[in-house]
Image (cartoon, rainbow, N blue to C red; front, side, top):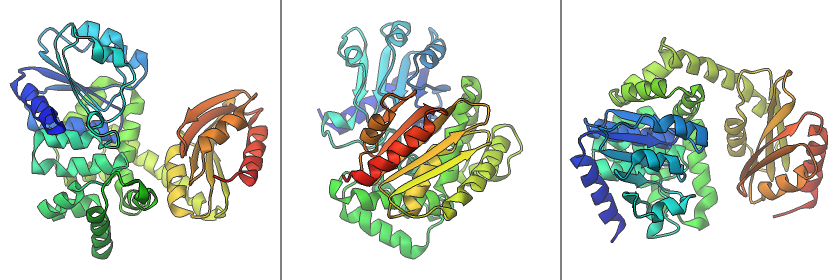
Length: 387
């Protein structure tokens, strides 16, 4: 078997289904995967977002009815066992690019699962789910959605060049990039494979450039906030509507829409622009702390990623958010060749708080009472450690 065989089989199973239902992750990659399949397969009437939280998955699985003959999962490494009890032996297509957390479900022969994952054939091949959706659908008009989903999920893929060649107009709507920078980007994509680890820093630069300089942040933020409402039916309806739109129609709704989520998005983006002005006032140094409060939601992750793009001298970035009535600070940490997860674990030791993540990106919550100690420890850690 090959990855292409697995893609072909997934396509055949979906094409032959009469009434499939799809579940996908609550981010841009998962959403654009659903949008692509929805645009291709008219029999796919329903799609619901699921997170890794057990209770959210239990809420979602009750949407499976007897008439559903195929259950599709995209972009989720974890599906609870109760989900498969509800599926009750029906055919499943499970497409993902993460190492699955509950391997026993895949090993259970009673679960009829066709598992599609590039890592089966190459551990370094973590191409995102929106890319897999594009390989299944094979519709050039879907290139706009795989471009959006892949860059938002931190992948620079050849499909960006394919997208530009197919539809320059929509490419320029999605990415406000000069001709000179676009050619520089394409030269990089042509020269280096998407998983060439020697080019991680340069690849990160390009992804951040497309996100923060070329306008992708507005689409990524939209999908980030969409699922904060935690109402499956509302999310499903919005995504089904987007699947019918052109990119220009979608962008017009984002900027000027007067219905529900779009007005909320405009309000949130206005808040984000207000908060991120503080980035310009922050010194570019080894440790960057940015604290903000009194806004309706936290922008920690977006701010930490944008600071990482706009500053160059840092080892570690810590963005913290709280409200006056809260007893906790929430923190988002980013590192550059510096293990912030190790730092986090050491600096949280003995304090009221918890967190975790990866070497270059972590998060935590810490009590207001212990936050000054936590902040002091981080300062000392950064000044006495090098990675």
